[in-house]
Structures are given as structure tokens and as C-alpha cells.
Amino acid sequence: MSVRRPLVLPRQGEVARAARDGGAGASMSTQQRRPSVSACALTAPLSGEHAFCFSDRIMTHTIHVSLGARSYDVHIGAGLIARAGELIAPFAPAKRAFVVTDENVAHHHGAALNDALKAAGLEVFAFVMPPGEETKSFAGLESLCTVLLEKGITRKDLVVAFGGGVIGDLTGLAAGLVKRGVDFVQIPTTLLSQVDSSVGGKTAIDTPEGKNLIGLIHQPRLVLADSGVLSTLPEREIRAGYAEIVKMGLIKDDPFFQWCEALAGDVLRLDPLALTHAIATAVEHKARIVEADETEQGERALLNLGHTFAHALEAHGGYSTKLIHGEAVAAGMALAFDFSAAQGLCSGQDAARVKAHLNRAGFITDIRQLPGAPFDPEALLSIMASDKKAEAGSLTLILARGIGQAFVQKAADAEALGAFLKRETQ
Ligand SMILES: NC(=O)c1ccc[n+]([C@@H]2O[C@H](COP(=O)([O-])OP(=O)(O)OC[C@H]3O[C@@H](n4cnc5c(N)ncnc54)[C@H](O)[C@@H]3O)[C@@H](O)[C@H]2O)c1
Ligand SMILES: [Zn+2]
Image (cartoon, rainbow, N blue to C red; front, side):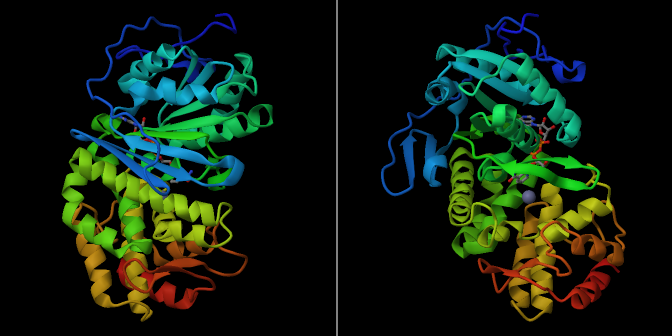
């Protein structure tokens, strides 16, 4: 295959396994039907930073992330992939898009994106990686950077991360590294990546020493969160993403948590209005936090609510797929509220309300019942103490004074935490 030859995304049932061969996706014809979901025209922001456009049943939100020269828009709504070409083309001066995706996403949605990009006159190069966290590795990074270079990527080209957080993190890092930095766009396809990982510019791979330890901050030029693609996402992954939505209410928005209490069922059923409202609210909060603290010197750490506990639970189980990240985060948030209550920082009623909601949404919050139990409290404590958010010799936790009132607790009481973990695990 010649280096300059354009590659297109496969149609259903024609999944290219390029990354496994160490090469790029195979070239295929493209006669895929357009998605049946109709898109609402995006409009200029109506007011402030967050605008929305309403037409029949479909709502499109636009949230601006204001970071000076690195500012960008996040568009949220059903049917955005059909409009991806016209939305992305202004960021691709050489009219070439290097699309990185995984096999599952390529299978379900590859042809739709390919058609949309081609309709806008873009030449499409596609790189299909194996799905799964293992792809976010030095080996995955090397094979991706190699094919991008082999295909002659230049700094006028645009890289498109089309997938969940694994593809977004890996692709963002590769884009930040090749040729000392090429622009990239995020098209997140999991609920978790739409509400969290695609916004804020954090990119990374995992190493044997831990998750996300090699990475950089490389902001995308645009984020297109098409809520329509979530219809093919397994229910378990939808629930996992929902944990990161609730997290935003628990951190700083009590009214939004109340909205979640009332309408979680609609979000989990992918009701279009509830879903786009939930995604947009979570993104809005994340955008404001990233604007205030892009490099995580302070406030951005709040986004780790539940995560120090969650990482310990995940690491204890060897990052097994029996407990996926969002499930661990839900249990971790329950633990953070319980520990806050045990420390006299927030009321027991608030902690109970958090757990009741998470249970109703289908999460296990009693860690004795979680996949991977029984957990060794000393092992959990030692993993938490070595978490990358910990400063030398001191334990940093995100705790809460109530729902919507999370704060960063530096030099947390390790002895009290040890005793708490012992109680929770027995
Ligand atoms: N950069 C950040 O700020 C940040 C924040 C949170 C999480 N993360 C990272 O995100 C990663 C997890 O992301 P994730 O939960 O999206 O997992 P993922 O990317 O592994 O996707 C989960 C699964 O869903 C499949 N999939 C994706 N979209 C689909 C669709 N529309 N239909 C059907 N299947 C689909 C994938 O192929 C995969 O099998 C972790 O590596 C985590 O460290 C990064
Ligand atoms: Zn998370």
C-alpha cells in the first residue's frame, strides 16, 4: 500500500486489524447509509459560554472552553457525526484527517464518520487499534506514531481521536508528540469520554508502574460529542460513564445532584433530552474547572473525587475488567462521603443519600460486595498513599462538607483512614 494512498474506515463487518499488523487500516469502498438520526443545526452561542439549539426532539449544546490561544468548543448532541466534516474542515488546512479509532467503534460508526469527512472534501487516513486499556501503552503509542509518520503526517494535518477514553488519551498523546505537536480533534464515543476524558487536554498511556504516568497536556481544537453513538455502547459502560456525571453534582452542584436523583433513569435509558442535559452540565462544570486550573495546581484536583479510593480498588484487583473504572469511582465516591462523615466533615444523611442514589442507579457501594472482594485494608491504604496525586510523604484526598461541597484535603489523617478502611472491608 503506497504511503500517500488514502485509507477509509471500514463498513460494518469489515473491521480492519491494522494495529495488530503494525500498520494502518485497509482501504475499502464506502457506500454506507447515513445515520437515521437527524441533526439540529448548530447556531452561534445565544448567551454566555453555553448555548443550545432546540429542534423537535434533538438538542445541541455548545460549550466554549476558554484557554486563550488554546480555546475550543465542545458540541454535544445527537447526529453530530453526520456533520463532522463541515465542523472539522476549518481545522484541517491541508484537507487531510488522520482518524484513530478502535475496532468496536470502527465497526459501528466508522463508515458514518468516513462519509461525513469525505463529503466535506477531506482525505481520510484511518488507523484502527485493538480495543481495551492495553492499547494505551508504550507499544500502542509506538505503533501509532510510526504509522502516522509512515503516512507522511505534517503539522498542517489534523489527527482525529474517534473512540472512548483509551483512544482519546493515546491519540492525544501521539498528536502532541509527532512532529512536536499536531492539532487534534476529539470525537468521544463512550459516555465517560463525552463527559470527562475528551475535555481538558489530559493525554496519557499506562506503564507497569501505574496508570496515566506518561503523558502531557495537549488540548484538542474541537470536541464533537455525538450522543447518538451511545446507542451501541454496552449498558455497563453507560452506567460507568454516569458515575462521572453524578460526580460533578457531588463536587459542586447540589441542584444538579437533585436533578440526577429525579432523572437518572432517563439518562441511563438514553432519553435524548435528559442525556444531552446531563452531558452538557458535566462538561460545563469540567470546562470551568479546567479554565481555572489547566495544569492541576489546585481546583482541578476536585475532579478526583472518589478516585483515590477507586484507583486503590482497581489496583488491588489488578485492573481486572470485573470492576471497571466508573464502577470503582461510584464505590470510591461513597467511601469519600462516608469517610467525610466519619471525620465529622459532612452529615451522615448526606453520605446515606449519596449511597442510596448510587445504589438506585445500579452501583454497588458496599466494598465487601464489590467484585474483587475481600479487599485488604492495609494494601488499599498503601496504594492510596502512593497515588500519583499524593505529595511526598503526605496523603491528599478529595473530601466533602456536604453534597456539592467537595474540597481538597491535603495531609489527610492516614491513621484515621486506615481504621476506616478496616471497618469498611470487614
Ligand atoms: N484524559 C482524561 O482526563 C481522562 C479522564 C477519565 C478517564 N480517562 C481514561 O479513559 C479511559 C477509559 O475510557 P472509556 O471508559 O471510554 O473506555 P474505552 O475507551 O476502553 O471504551 C470502552 C469500550 O467501549 C467500546 N466502545 C467505545 N465507544 C463505543 C460505542 N459507541 N459503541 C460500542 N462500543 C464502544 C470500546 O471499544 C471499548 O471496548 C481510561 O484509560 C482512563 O484512564 C482519561
Ligand atoms: Zn474517572
